[in-house]
Image (cartoon, rainbow, N blue to C red; front, side, top):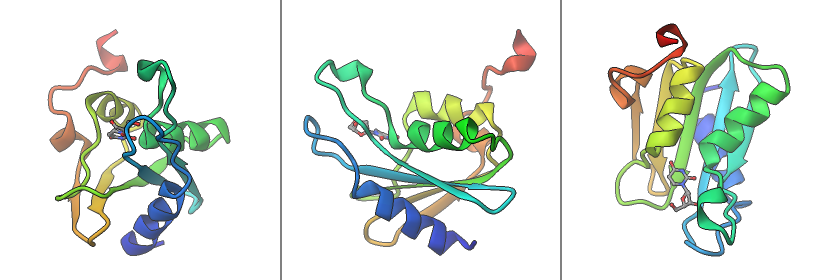
Length: 128
Ligand code: THU
């Protein structure tokens, strides 16, 4: 699957966003090395910190289906520039070493970065 198709998948999952509190919809799509796609959206909660970001929803879906070898993740929101993952999601992405992170917006702006660019000097299992 190419980058444009993965971003399109993230846009489709964004439509499922449950964001009644922020009204900020985010979609994400993870591509596995085996070629499968798992999507996710943000899922908010009346107790605000309990909500889950789109990226973590998508990664949890892949991992819970037995897919840990992840090739890329696309993130899309209606932002001015490319949608950047939050700090917690950066740590989550680093855990699985997803080599390509496609940050996009609804206007077609895309920026591709590595986990180390997103979260330099990250804490990992090697530190334990
Ligand atoms: N959000 C994501 O889903 N991913 C991010 O990387 C940034 C923030 C969600 C969380 C919350 O539901 C809404 O966007 C506003 O912060």
